[in-house]
Length: 361
Image (cartoon, rainbow, N blue to C red):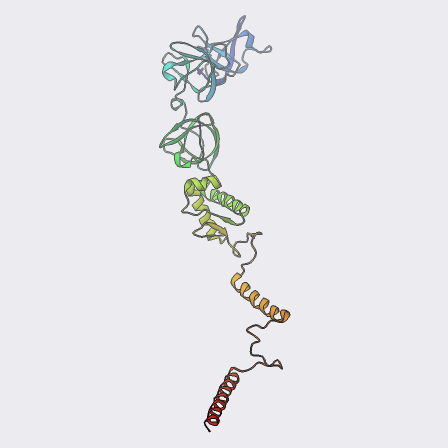
């Protein structure tokens, strides 16, 4: 059976002056014939030869074949340029002699002459090929992909509260959930994605991230890299705002929490009220900007003692440590010093008493 809007292999059934007639390989009787114009027939073509062609309708609405591949075929989407505007719709350049019709009802937003728009191909009720900007009606849901497969896609619609609609390989319908979107997106963006889920109806759930465990490791590496650039400290923790985390690390808060949780369990970082920092000994990630911890209070105390002792030796001034030294350099005991002081006081009183007695006499 000859299919409209698709590239297919057909058989040369008959040669005529103005071209060759082609039939489907399974059409034994040759009832469904289609013309390939002479200017596109290979010079050495013979009856029975197979040739790959695209089938569409000419300006007279007759099915016709071409060896040219248009910019878009059934099951695909592509950007096409508006070549002409009319009251009933727009005509787009798709690489063939006859432009592709984009009906007014299939347009989304304002369409302008020479503008390029993302469209798909469909067959209308009159069995004619037309373009549509409503890509939901042309994308398939029978993809061959499975969970964790990596795919490429084109964003074609953004829906608040849902996410970004994606045409995977230009053929299959997929969705990036809103929570998975880490940066602003626009229709037309080309993205590399991971299949996170295949629904029962065949639609694909997509993620901009790698598989969960691998992504946590990648996020952890990013956190460590930023830590090393910031002397082993970062003023972010699980209480920081999503905006602050994204600005510093370009990742969501959920991804950040998973990453630092994994790093903490491995003993690579410590989490504090002020933020996160590289662990001193457990990590195996040596922080070159930080040596072993130093007890600065004890160092300061010892330095003061040493300084004071050195000053007393070098300056010649007495300090509290040599107040009670005798002339021989021996330390006086406090008790001896106190006893001598008491004796001196007693002797002074006796002298005073004797002096008073002599005066009375």
